[in-house]
Length: 336
Length: 290
Image 1 (cartoon, rainbow over the protein chains, first blue to last red):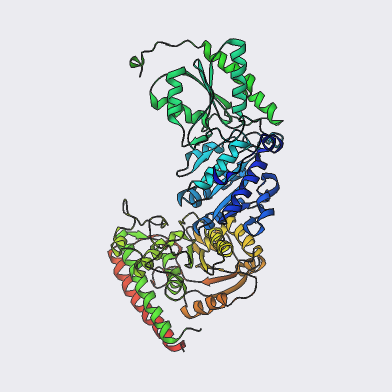
Image 2 (image 1 turned 30 degrees about the horizontal axis):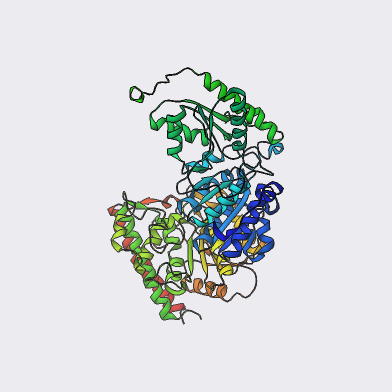
């Protein structure tokens, strides 16, 4: 933990996730004069403006011009600064896809993108402001690390590890408040390592971001209602992904459900599917998320319910997977 | 300090050597961006041999001046200049564009020593230059950033985002150029996507604009000196009016030579043309130099 900054439960419930990010960045900025911050007219919305209030000479609001913001950040990083950039996830990814590809990832510069309003969290704004395919883009780019934290505590950890680790980062957080899944920051956050939120032997639910809380709720419900032992893995780092944790889930539980606030194409579910396919051991598998469509307009929690990525949707998917009939012996040698 | 006649002649000599090395590199590679490479060559030569504060023995020196070649496809002109300065092994030019070479059409800042930004996708360089310029301000450093854009790439909207921001943040430690060679891949810029009135556009975006003959080394020196002496709060844009293919008579001004093959016959013709061009350039320096 850099700097000994800790947040209390009060902070994590009284502050939106982005506010925790803004505070964390200010803390880092106090210690590290090379940190600068950039935004494209979203200083208030993304909370990176908090940094600007404290360090106006190190804060650059470029207006509504995301391409320029990303190019500037690349130049600043090349000159030895550590730029943090914030915009809404859709505009911090696809809007700047070429700059992200060439200026940031190809040059492998030390720039940190904190993308807010991820997934369908800005639900009422509609599909122009939903980011349901950003993982697909960022995950495919070389050199970059992709994190989707589950709550404010994890966001604080992710922002710190991004500063401490050289190279490009894309951290995707939500608009507004997230349900808190940790009691504090000291749960052993490690880059690229899944966190087991609930132990389990019957089935594994893998989730990231806002779906982690929903997966935990589903697991707790199914334990009481159905007597099921549901393992919940929070894969906060989508890239590099924790292959070992996924492989262990395959062999231990042989049923895997993935839930994410993203398209089922190219995101966490796809990443897990790739690991399963290359591992070569069969398991029951289902991806929950946006099913190759655009998401409806509405409150985030309502959209999550419609998409089936809330606790009810996840519980239903678990029950369906438990009914799937497939070879259950322990002999892996007869499988491809 | 105005350029002396002797300095002008020395830079003409260097520009001739570099055009010859560009031609050789095209010949070794079989083809290259010979049109836009020759239009921009005088700017590269004067920057690397008169203005840039850099250290060949310490290419990553934190206080060095930065140079961003936004028109990254002119790598075949840039690579010979960097090699000649001593940043890279001259033998690398003979591998230009070959499989697993460190040098391809667009130079990679992580592979070619002395390159400050990996460019090639157009409309990126000015933003990167703005970033290094602001970094100098944050770090309290005095280095300058020079950025050369192509004229065709000004069609990209991202340049104008950067232009607005450069004027807004009053970034006067970045000195920018447009290599105004009037041609892009598919034809003349005014036929494909009109840029004129180009100087007025940059003026309207908040720049102090100088329009010069970009293939005249003396005029380039005066314009850069003007930019370096700038005490106002407007960034300087030098619109360098150039000839695409400058120095090779059968290529000059012909958009079809944006990217061309340099087979044996054309190679010999080009060498002869460059020699004549050098004589004419020397005569101009002798006549106009002081």
